[in-house]
Length: 451
Image 1 (cartoon, one colour):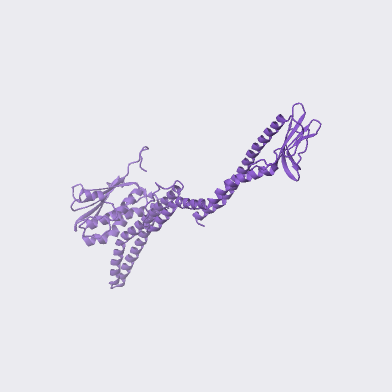
Image 2 (cartoon, rainbow, N blue to C red):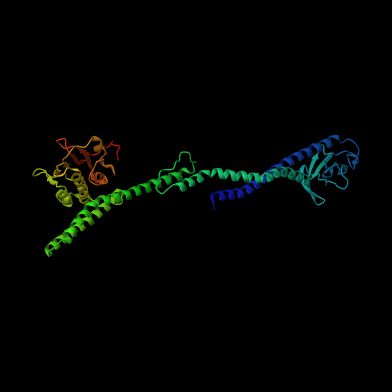
């Protein structure tokens, strides 16, 4: 059942109940007011009769024949007077005689001729007179019914208008929900921008906040999946190129010894590709918070060896010499606790960029220091604008001959942040080429606002 129909059903069920309660209260109050009015009149009538009693016994119709009574119904009223001995002195009705109750004083409800009557007895101060003024209860009930029915009839007549007004009000009240539904239907799967909750009703704001939070989480998840897809495609280029070259060597092998050696190299390439896929999956899980970063003492010689071996075919193709410098004897290279496999991915991307964008026949140097490491290539220095934009996803300066997607530095930056390293781009010491340096980030102060 729709929310609109449910609200209208609740209104249809609750309105009669509320009306019945209001009717009961109205009848009760009307009965009270009518009783108060007639009781007051009966008391006043009884006192007037007692004050005017001076003559002989009177009986019959006190009003006399032919008297204009307007719309009054005197058949519902009766008056009687007795003396101290109980003798009836006056009665304004023939055939209807109020009972004498010498000990009564005030109001009494009696049954007279099988009909309920309300009688007021008034004793004189000296006990010489007893006056009784009575009225049939039906007269009062008729007046209460007429009063309440006169109020109820207009309510019943405007009931259709009230239902139409309620339906219109419910429709207007639910308009924000219809607007929200229409906006969600118009959206494409890629439109995950937050919904505007500024002008929404107070009752809808928790729902909008929850939906905006869901949109944000879905958008974050989609970006993470797209980034993983792009990163995986970027990282698999080098292993696939190596495997292609090793397969060519294997297919051209002429002797069993050459074939076995080519098979061994191809098997090693497949193992490295498998390890790379696992590394990319691990990086994706680390970014999503699904698992913590594995930390162990990093053997930089082993890390550098794996990265350099993977890039030897590219260096040979571009006729670039790879150099690796280590700290002086007795000094350790950048002591760090981290994931060696991810650090291999980081170094491989740095060296890959240095090899691809350095001039042919030049030198690419990987230098380790006690507090950091550097990757340098030769060639013209980059403009400051390009250095500032290094690390943006899919950013590639114009005029590049080498293919690429601009994702390598982005991957390097994320792995460096996971290990507490800061990444810096700038020219080499001689003002030429590009130098990428990594150093441990300074410890945060207690008042630092950055998370």
